[in-house]
Image (cartoon, rainbow, N blue to C red; front, side):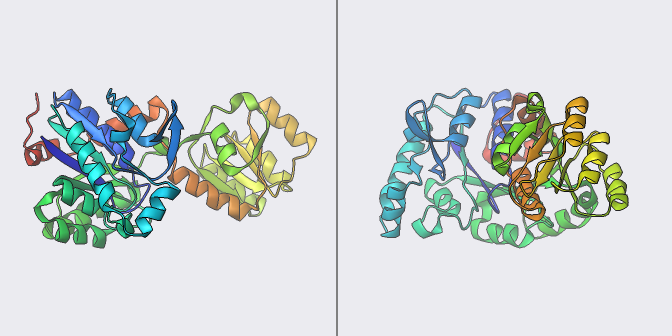
Length: 358
């Protein structure tokens, strides 16, 4: 049996999606897998038990019926923090070790989901990804998600501290405009520093999509028209803070985007609605006039009213889209396909000492 710890350079880098994709591929190739997430950062009650929701849903996806206390042996509660602050961390390591051994029985491979940053998150209580992978004696894959740039320094530092235990890294969510530079310059530079790149996953707007209903909830806003369309999805957004001529130019270049605009800008409201935007988000807690509401109903386009100003709502919107959880089957299927088309599985299987059916 071998363990594979899946960590990342920062939180919200795509660990859950890539864990699902890897596990699905291993299962298709006849590998008997187990799964655990040693540290659950956000405990939630499900079926009367406190669990980490992501870990619980991942185990369900793989068809595993793991005991929640083993699936996520450490839940970050207030009691946990008090003990961790006082240095009582050894007990938690023992809990993780016991759960790992139990879940590993009769398995070829156990996938271990990380939390936050592999090198740093949980350092204060010695439950960072590096420490856990070391005392469990697992191999490691690290994910780095593109956000304005790739975190080359972190990946090189991880290689230096992990050595042969680092199988490789996955560069995730790389946009089209940065793909050529990634392939021609970033990949050779990393591999010259002994950092194996297992795959480069391209950006896909579908994976960042969120339903209008969920978006309104997370923005703390209210849907005031076309509630029946709350299950439709939004993939991106445009801010309407400019003169109408400039707005029209940008809007026509960016189809299928939600428009965030002040509630008092009826001119932009009408342009966005007539341009068939998927959703109109009005800021400043200002409701539209009757003409705008009528056009919204006629055209079937929902309107959300949010309390904060346009800049604040736009910031929240960007964070929401970057941190959208994979819940819908269509997004999971799309994400797994995208990941598995771009991973070097021959190399991964060989480094794990596993054989595939193909």
